[in-house]
Length: 66
Image 1: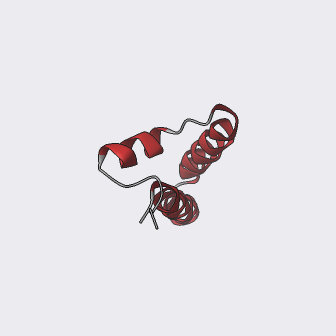
Image 2: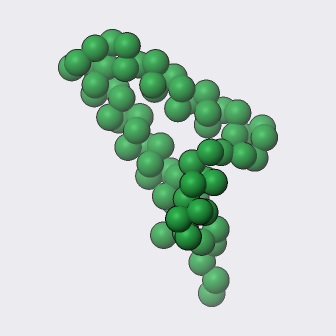
């Protein structure tokens, strides 16, 4: 698994989890959904994402070499 695929997996998981928590537990969890969206938005412009930095530190490759 590459950094990009893991990032999409984690972002999707966090969004689905925060929406479920916002619906079933407390609407304040929707702030976490907004935080994820804001982070994805800023990473589109800055080319930097904290989660990608963590995934690289854990040893995930940026791309699979053929």
